[in-house]
Length: 140
Image 1 (cartoon, one colour):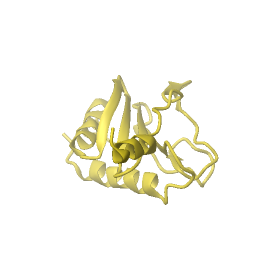
Image 2: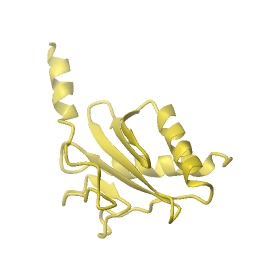
Image 3: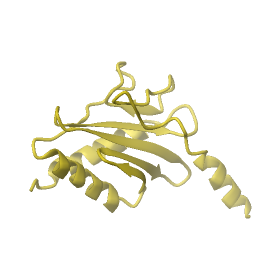
Image 4: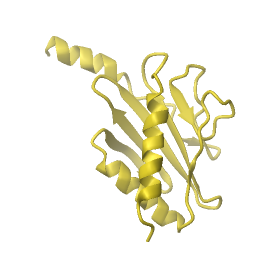
């Protein structure tokens, strides 16, 4: 293995085993500023969920379509109403989650860096970009 490959593997970090849905909620953000979540209660980590007015299944399919088109995104886990993805940058991997709340017409979102303390706002800006794409796609 080359030195560069070793460095890149170290920057990817280990895939977390504490993600997923528990009691209808995504995992809480840690205290560090490298995580955002629509279910966070503190302003530092909080961001708005994705909001939709069409059929919940159609809205979730639209989100999956957007994520599937992104070159930096790989879908790691897919269950009914839940998607877990990896977002890759040049050196780092971030973990993203999306949870459908069909009753409230929301998709809860969470994105967190695997490594480091600060992400310089990358997780928030990436999810806001996904929100813009989600809102701009035509609804069926």
